[in-house]
Image 1 (tube, rainbow, N blue to C red):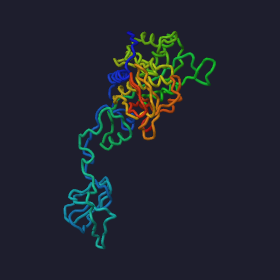
Image 2: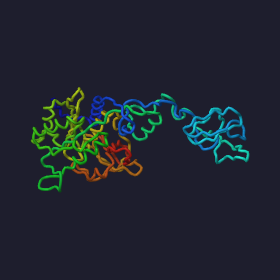
Image 3: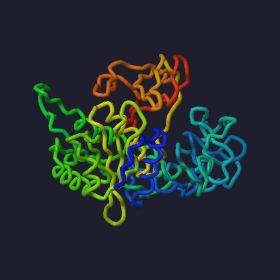
Image 4: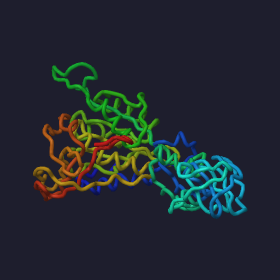
Amino acid sequence: MSVDATPVDWEQARALAYEAGRQAAGPAELISLPEADGRTLAEPLRALTDLPAFATSSIDGWAVRGPQPWRVVGRVLAGGIAPALDEEGACVEIATGAMVPAGATALVRVEESTRDGAGLVRGEPRALPDWRLPGEEAAKDEELLPAGTAVDPAVIGVAATCGYETLSVLPRPRAGVLVFGDELLTAGTPGAGRVRDSLGPQVPGWLRRCGATVEPAAVAGPVRDTLPAHLEAVHGALAAADLVCTTGGTMHGPVDHLHPTLAELGAEYVVNTVAVRPGFPMLLARVPGPEGRPRFLAGLPGNPQSAVIALITLVAPLLAGLQGRPAPSLTRVEAGAAVPGRGGFTHLALARLDRDGRIATPVGHVGSAMLRGLSNAHGFVVVRPGSTAAAGDLVPFLPLPLLAGERP
């Protein structure tokens, strides 16, 4: 296994992770509409018919033909087939959503009509027709949504409106988490040289926000700081997951066994170290898997904030590629305060957005081992190598992953 420890540019690392995921995306599968929520369209969603498929009334009232007054010759309700209006001066009572009869020249709202003792209807149609025309929303075979669209309840609603019963979607990646470190506690308060594990409880939530499935049984650790224990844990986790995230052990210290483990498994690096601060000692490796489809291992640093930066740098793009979704993109915001550079490294500075989402102000408590700043932030101001950001500058901003419906 070739080990090149030259740090990869941050943007290039993100692109490499995304492309690795895109190339390893699983085959499409057909699933029912209710099951499709949270998946990704594997092919474009096209209209199976004109939408609406026929002219429909947008009011309760009368469908009329010719000049008034009109004699009532019937009624049409939603779901019924309207008989044609063949004669001048005829009308039918019509309900909202009902099919407009062929031959109708106008619709009259019930609240804007009268009916005399002889049963004749009078009223003035509005200038704009009160019906929805066939194809007004979409024409048959028109592409409504492209492949790669994340499926949410609105997408499911559109598909149902078109007449779909199933959707072709890409599989949701399965992810696992392995926590490394003999110094970690999984319960109680830190002390006596040991610290509480904060990554095992939080990483699954970030993975879910990136679209992965993480079962409770797929989170394990702390794994003992020995090579045999690492090999056993990683091998077992990869057997049940498309991606395994490990925490800690990404350097080459006396108890760092991740790199030797990857070598034993015949892995190849997609990215080995990234020129970003915080978060420098991170990696993404491709591990041979069954049926020619690789598995992936993302080595996250042990320091909590650095681990989250590694996750949004390498794991979020990888999972986007595996799901056939667009790569996570940066927005542009105004820096609320000066943000220093980190020399030849990209600096990701935790920041909080204002109410309008236009100004990002750096937060405090942002050491690599700290999480207080992360809990008060919406994402990271991105300061590229060799530059700084002054207050008022327009700067790139990388938001933290969100669940559908969440707002920063």
